[in-house]
Image (cartoon, rainbow, N blue to C red; front, top):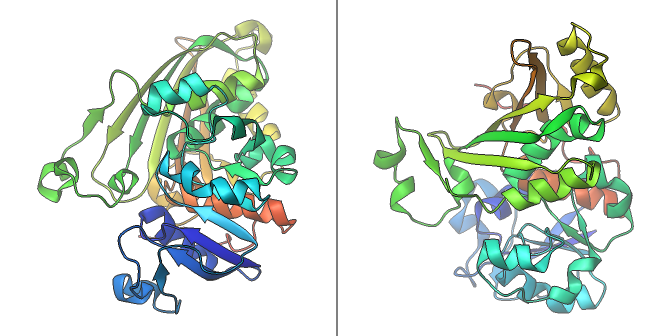
Length: 344
C-alpha cells in the first residue's frame, strides 16, 4: 500500500516515518514539509537515511492512504480535496475529533474549515471505536492526553463505577510541544523544573468529556483537567481520580481487587492496553504503542485512582495512527507495532 505523509518534518511525522519503515504492508512514496520542500529527508533527519525520499510542496503521486501531521485548521484545509474524493485519511490534528463545531471553535480559536465533514469522521481510539473506524475513510487520530485519559477511565465509566467529579492530573514530555522554537522548551528553562500550564483549561479537555460521555451519558461529568510539562523527551503520565459508586460494587471491602478485575476484563482482548501489577513508569512505554494502566482504590476515601502511561509520540500519535490504518485495510492491528520498550 502506498502512503503519503503531509508535513513529515514535525515530531509526529518523523515518528510515523520511523514506524512505517518497518511495516510490511505500507510503503512511504510521497511526503511534504511546510518549510523543507526540495530537500532530501535524510539530509534533515540522518536517522531516516534508509528512506530515499525528497520532500515536496504537494503529494506528487497517487497513494492508498494519507497521514496528515499538519496542525489544526491547516490540516483540514489541505485534506479537503482528498476527503471529498473518498481517499482514506488519518488526521493527527484536532480538526475532526470534536463532534460539536462550537466546541472546536471555542477551544481552538478558529472557524472550522470543513464543518460539513465532521459527521464523516471516526474518532480513532481503536479500543473504543474499532467498528466505526473499519467503516470510515476519515479517521481523527486522538490527542495524546485524551488517549491516556480516556483509556484510564473507560472501564469505570462504562460500568457506572464512578461519580461525576473527575480529576485528571497529566504530565507530558517536551516532545509534545512540537519542534517549534519556544522559550518555554529551551533546555535551561525546562531542565530540573516542572511547570503547570493551561491551568484555566486545556483544549484536549472537551475531547475527553465527549468520549467518556458516549460510554455513559447518565453521568454528567465535571472534569478538572490539569496539564504539566516535565523535563523528559517522551512520555505521558496521567493520574486520574474519581469518586466510586459504592452501590455498584455491592459495598464490598476488596474494592481494589474488584476494580482490577473490571479493568482486566474490559481490556482482555486489547493488544495495546496492559493492566499492570505495579504503578507504571513512562520508560516502560517508551517507543511502544502500549498504554499501561494501574487501577486501584483509596480505601480511606472510596476514590478510584488510575495511573496511565503512554509514549506521546507512539500510542499518543504515530503508533495509534498506524494502528488505525491497519484497521482501515484489514491488517492485524499489531502489524509494524510490536517493538518492546526502549531501555534504559
